[in-house]
Amino acid sequence: MTISDESRYRLYLRLEEVLGPEEATVLMEHLPPGGWAEVATKRDLDNLGLSTKRDLDALGLSTKRDLEALGLSTKRDLDALGLSTKRDLEALGLSTKRDIDSLAVSTKRDIEALGVSTTREMEALRVDMRGLGDRVDLRFEVLSARMDARLERELRLLSWRVILAMLTLVSVAVAAPHL
Image (cartoon, rainbow, N blue to C red; front, side, top):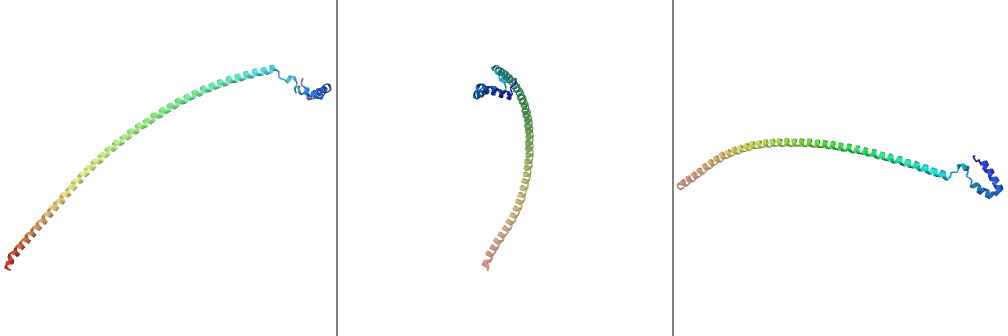
């Protein structure tokens, strides 16, 4: 039976007549507002505790399974990512090695070509220097021949002048006593 506010009020009035106003108020304060059917018993609380414990245990077990599954899934994903990264790094390493080897071969070819080119240029320079040396030698020979010819001519002229000067002196010496 549901207790209404009106029935509670009538009960209070009757208690007030029998017990007095103060005692009626104290007793009414100790009555449940919705009736005794709404009051939980110790057994109700024990059952609620057991039910709550079962729910929490089930939730804990479910959460544990979910976490284990998530852990396994994460481990699989990390293992797959590790393998993928390892393959990518190995491929990158091979590609880099090929690039370095190719660059080394290309650089070696360039250095060899530069060496051959430099050798050719040095040989051409040597030939040019030999030709230049031959031309310089020829010019020195021509210059030497000219200088020799000029020196010889100058010496002849000087010799004639000396001879003429001596003849003049001898003539003056011979003619002087006769003068």
